Image 1 (tube, helix red, strand yellow):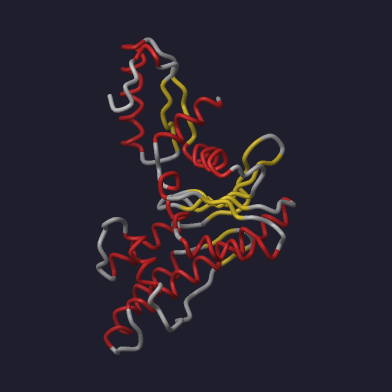
Image 2 (spheres, one colour):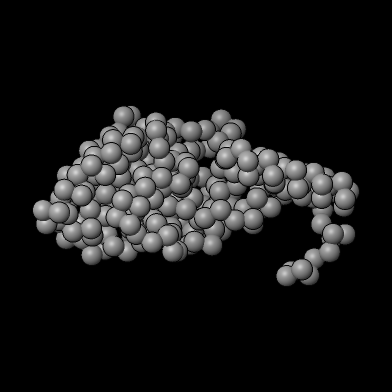
Length: 245
């Protein structure tokens, strides 16, 4: 109704087949099948991860980058190789967005507009860096240890006035983002690529973009990133990727 498009003008119906949580995926699949039968339109199933990548490429103009896909449910370093997208590095436990969101709850930060955004803003006020566990293995990362450590020590450090909430947010961001920069740079060397594209909700973080941009410039490369309209999940990325199928 908003775009004033009629069912007759629709060529196909695209939907996310996965990966993701089972219940929402099942609901969307049922709705799509109903609409397909009602309007007599073909269905195109789309991979959620690939949709983020393709949308990022078309919006930024990135040609053949190493992709850092970071969100609440995913942390992967991906590149196109031998005719398909391949994962060269990833988290071995929780996603970076999950790590940030859960620590935001420890600090009782608001969910408006998002926990990760509020951590980012608070981190800008941090002045003291606190050493935290740093877990990189090859091109894989682990965030459960750093989250467990900071959850356990945050209350004590704040109670003893050893640091501020801003210091904790700053230290957490700097540490986990340094880990992401490291594995992305290793993937660039492995795949012989110069450019990086960041996609996913955490990709909106300006500090992550800044750290990655510095690394890329040191390698004579370029960073590509989108704003929050296309970093976070959106229908446009599913529709566009479906058209490429």
